[in-house]
Image (cartoon, rainbow, N blue to C red):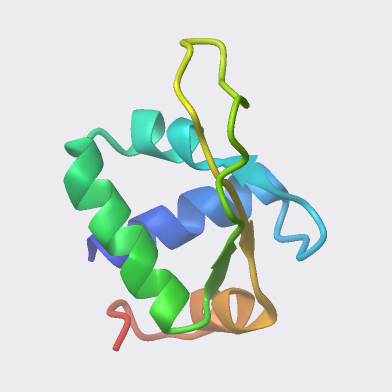
Length: 89
């Protein structure tokens, strides 16, 4: 359930464009779960090849001063959201 919600939020923020990326901190802020739990779901989505997480760039910080990684949706993630199934395997 949370994986799908997080995937949908990434798709929304990237306009379901595999060439657009969003900071992981913005997803963490939007989801409302503790950051460790959200990161766990992000890594699960990455392991399923539904999102791509870039390497953290040292010295790069968001508006709150937090280091972040850029996240993008993959074609597999877009296909998953288009499927009828509510749960990600």
